[in-house]
Image (cartoon, rainbow, N blue to C red; front, side):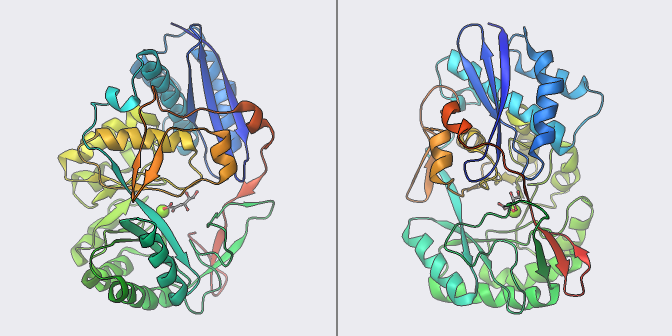
Length: 403
Ligand code: KDG
Ligand code: MG
């Protein structure tokens, strides 16, 4: 079998997605996700201009060699654009191989280690009362784990919270990017009260998660983690901007609240100190941004040695292709932790028909050969790319801050 051609399809059924489709001479094709929210087009160029011409004629079964060729062969390594592009190729190749062998992908990753994948949902409320309300709804829908983001009193609009009935979608179409507001003081005062109220209302059983979205310093994160200890969170996520891996040493000195990080990481080199010093509990790098299944297998095996589990990024800006790949991976590995799940909108599900499904708090990848997700190209063509950006964030005095 050889790779005959490949194409990149950008579509926007509510939000932008970059999809790579690799065709072989035997009629089997594979799909991969290369979506990088707000920076989709550089990945498209990287794939079209630099990767696809080098793939034609290669044996799609030589996944590791192709991965190394694209990574080492470019000389310039890592970075979100490069790794998302390599990730898309890698996913598509694993899809091809599993389809050719007529088996679901999880069988190539070691087979099932469990029957089902526990997921966490996003409960977003504009204030305390709305947050309690929405957590109750998610528990009624069967979720066993819920991430809670709540409007901070005195702060107009913050991460994860919407005032409309629509699910939260941070990327907004058009220019300039939306501007949000932030106050660390008000946030740190509010969050422990929020979780106290949630535990008082729903008891000990639900797993509760929270995303700080890169906004604290290490010592502030230590304080938050310590103050949340009585409420036994499953994790706090991205409590600091994590380029400085050493910053986590400070947090660990102050709290036993479990820590999750990694959705903006793209290689093992972003995380090796965090893992080997056991400074984190969950690694969240997505299969798409982390160079695909081949590289994430290495990250996750390394993590396993240090008691670090997975909690793959699963926001709606990762396409159903990444979600499917994540679910196969989650099912197969031993050190699975939890999977993030934000359901895609109806249009997206129409563009990407898939075998995976949700039932009673868990997800299942389905048993179709390969990833079990396809792309309806005609439907995709009805929703062309639309420029959209993530917001920026400013402190109360106007200083540009982490979003
Ligand atoms: O593109 C950015 C989103 O994926 C991110 O804001 C979502 O933090 C996020 C999460 O935990 O899902
Ligand atoms: Mg996050």
